[in-house]
Image 1 (cartoon, rainbow, N blue to C red):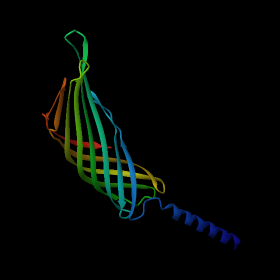
Image 2: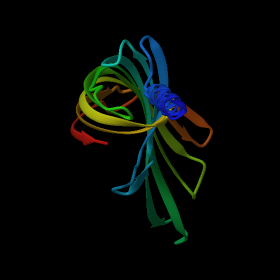
Image 3: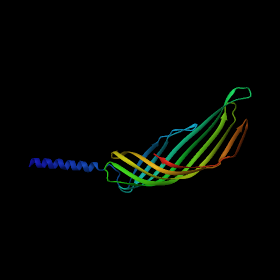
Image 4: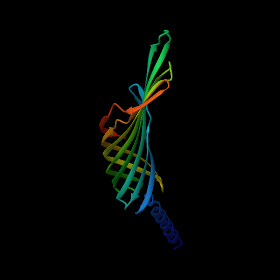
Length: 217
C-alpha cells in the first residue's frame, strides 16, 4: 500500500511538472516584444549597414496575433575621384550619398499551436516607408561643397513564414523568411551650394522612384 501511494505521489508530481512546463508560449491577450537583425553587406562602391528592427505582438489567443514591425536601415555610398589642380598637385574629390529608411509595418500572424516549445506561423503585413537621402560633394582643394537633401515616402507589403523556438517561458529565438514588395519615392528636396563666401540654396535636381521585389530573411 505504501508503494502504491508513493507511485501515485510520484505520478502526480510528474503530471504537475508537465502541466507547468506546457506554459512556454504567451497567454491570450498578452504582449511580447522582439529585437530583429538582418545582415548587411557590401554594395557597388559603398557599404550597407545591417538592418535592425523591433517587433511588438499582441497575442489574441494561441493561434492568432497582431503585430507592429518597426525597421531601420542605413546605407552609405562613397566615391573618391583623384585629379590635379592648376599647380599639378594631386587633389581628391569626394561624393557621398547616405540613405536612412524607417519602416512602420502592422500585420497579422497565424500560429500552429500543436507543438509545445515550437511555434511555426504564417502571416502578412503592409505599411509605410519614410527615408532621408543626403548627397554631399566636396574636395581637398578648397572649402567649396554641394549638398542635396531629399525626403522620401513609400509603402511596403510582405507575406512571410517563420518559427519561434521557446527556450523557456518568456524567452524565444526565431527565424522569419518573407517575400515582399517595396516602392519608395524620393522627392527633389533642396540643394545647398557653397562657393567661397557665397551660399545658394535651390530646389534639388532629381526625383527618384525605386521599387524592389524579393525575399528577405
